[in-house]
Image 1: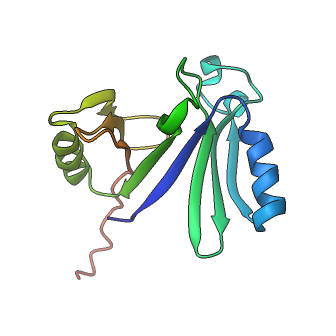
Image 2 (image 1 turned 30 degrees about the vertical axis):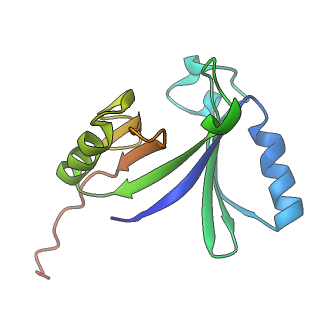
Length: 142
C-alpha cells in the first residue's frame, strides 16, 4: 500500500482553495490538471480542477472540483484516497469496503489508473481506491 491521503471535493471553488492554502499554509502544488486539460473534458467547465495534489509540510492533500449535484455539501466533501500498485489487492480492498456500503463508481480502468473506484462504506466514510499500473519486474528479485 502506498498510503492514504485526504481528498477534498469542492463545488467550483478548488482553484480559490489552492491559492488560499498556498498563502495561508505555505502549501506547494505538486500537480494540477483542469477538466479542459484532461481526456474527460466533457465532465464540466474546462477551468474546473480535475485533480490537484498539494504538499503541506510532511502531508499530502488532494482536491478537485466535483461536478456532481451533491458536491461540497456537508461532510460529504472529504474522502480518504488509498493508493496502491497491486490491482488484485485494490479489488479485494474495494470489495470489502463496499460490503454493506454504497458504490459510487465501480472499480475499473481509467486514463490515469489501472483501477479506480469510489465507495461509501457501511459507516458513511467515503473512500477512493486508486491503483497504478503494475510496474514490470526488473528481474533482480527481492
